[in-house]
Image 1 (spheres, rainbow, N blue to C red):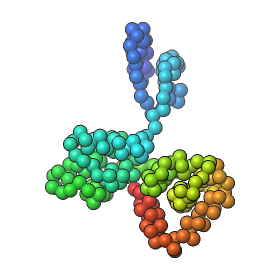
Image 2 (image 1 turned 180 degrees about the horizontal axis):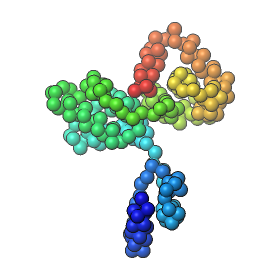
Image 3 (image 1 turned 180 degrees about the vertical axis):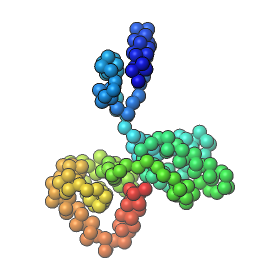
Length: 225
């Protein structure tokens, strides 16, 4: 509202002249808010701006462990991994999910395990990305095989990470709409022939290695939850 902006303008100037620190948060940058007056835009834009992205996989797990610690509960690794995959875009929902799981375990006198977490989250609707992102798949695959994400995307490829890399490429192809060339840019800027080879290699190994199919199924479930 115009009157609110007028009051905000004078409040801002008073605090600024008094040397006070002002912190503002918004889902848009000042210049993208069309109804904001120019004099407020100039004042907001004069400060230090930073984009705060949603927490990545490791950060989500760390947040959940901290919440559980405060409640004097030990959060099992498989529960933390499951919830981190299911709740990705909103920290409040993430904390709420952990609170509900711990609360249900306490009320029902049940162990705090994966079965309980799956049961609790099955009835919840959480905000999820509309499209699976390549970094999400890379994080899951790297963690599953005990590698670093950077090892899967490095320009120099090592034999020790070849299977994990090929699995990651295979899953990116399966769960995104990216072309072979676009997928290659996420794996050390490889060309489409390298990506195609990785996909065909996994297809060839599947009949020979039942455990590989189980790996793909487990990772696929984490990607889609």
